[in-house]
Length: 298
Figure (tube, rainbow, N blue to C red):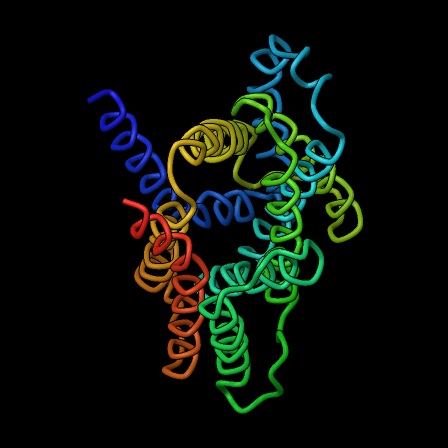
């Protein structure tokens, strides 16, 4: 019974996390409008998350010291990937950015096959083909060359590739509990954002929205999305099969696309939606072999 309760709780956490991240663009753009342009908004958020996680993570400092270096680097790389994704949501259309990031399963399968030497089931070969087809359809939907058309789209595509590398390293080497794991993750995000903020945007000279609003948005977003939801997600993913996690997180695409259409007036063209559908099908195909093997074993 306890196992059933744990599985139910973990499933709920993953679903809620995916839904929450579908709304992540809203506080980001609110910070941008309040005076923290582009990368500075993500920097404020990750600094807040880092501060919130510092004390609980230091209570497990011995676990951090014993962690495998590849695990630590992979977690920081994962944070860097989420940084690119976060900044991309300000510089591009929400639905397109999320879909480009969700090409991660394609890159993960390629890394698993050609870098790690893992077997590649036919379903995952199909996932690569369908995913790449979806990418080309999305990017060429308006008659342009099938390449990203904005800095946000480029960052989202790169973020998905970087997350594929990071998640592979985390899967192979990380044994860290959720809190210290997320602390390292956020540290990587914060450091990456600092570099990008200094390189991409001038230092904000004024905050039209006021310091109180900026502080509240930064602490609230860093606390809810980065510190709380990602820590909970890391706990939940240890208790669910990867197939279920991957499918449940796809709610982010739906929530992000619908909320951006209703609240920001952002809409995808029919061909872009068709390409996005192919990307989601590829994601399902990528996890399907895992799910099928588990079903066969029961």
